[in-house]
Image 1 (spheres, rainbow, N blue to C red):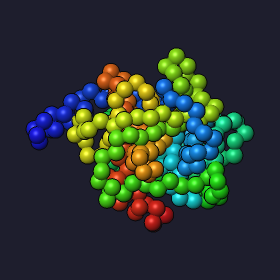
Image 2: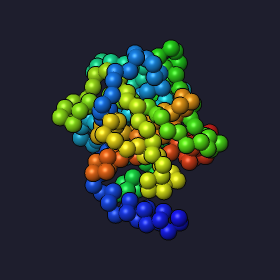
Image 3: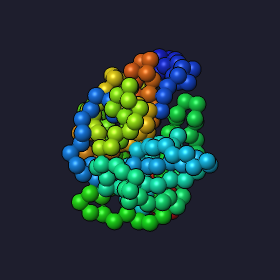
Amino acid sequence: MFIYCDIAVLILVLTFCTEAHAGKIIGGREAAPHSRPYMALLSCYDDNGNEAFCGGILVSEDFVITAAHCKAKSYKVCLGLHTYSENSSCLPVEQEFPHNEYNDENYTNDIMLLKLSTKATFDKNVRPIVLANKGDNKFPEKCVVSGWGATSEDNKDMSLELMEANVTLTHDVFCTENAYWSIGEKGPAEGDSGGPLVCEDGKAFGVISAKRPDLKLTKYTKIPYYRDWIDEIMKHN
């Protein structure tokens, strides 16, 4: 068993260069308006002011979780949205905390915390989600992903409305203790990385990370594995 897992991890490292950042909600449906008040939409800007989008997860009045590969020069974090527009009210980011062992070649430790410059105001449309912790040892199977990414491979434009899709996790296809995987064409792809994987009990179990299109696999950074890291940063900042 241990030999099999070691080989599987090696295959993962050697072949992961063919993956794409994850994010479009493909094969999904429009979410009920404001049914996911923890959702954040991130506008990410590079040195030249070019804009790209990622998803995010509101976890407190001043912290959002996203993927480390969404790291940018600057950000705007939009909360309380259902329909996106350029006039949406968004908050700036004071400080970023990408995992210090993030690997941009194989997307291990693909998780980052963003501290908002202004604390979020909670209401019926803006509320944090509970994170799965280290004591949540059960393997979640039926989960939901959500985001504003494109809705098909043919249409690269982002969706104006929040979309969601059901995904089913598969058991340790690569024997990785710090990630979950789902299989199939339905779910996230390029565009909404950093969005949440929410499972049966309504907790956030994962962060949308990356996709292996050739194997129809999607990877999610496993939140319970990183709870000590998350809690330490939020406590001291």
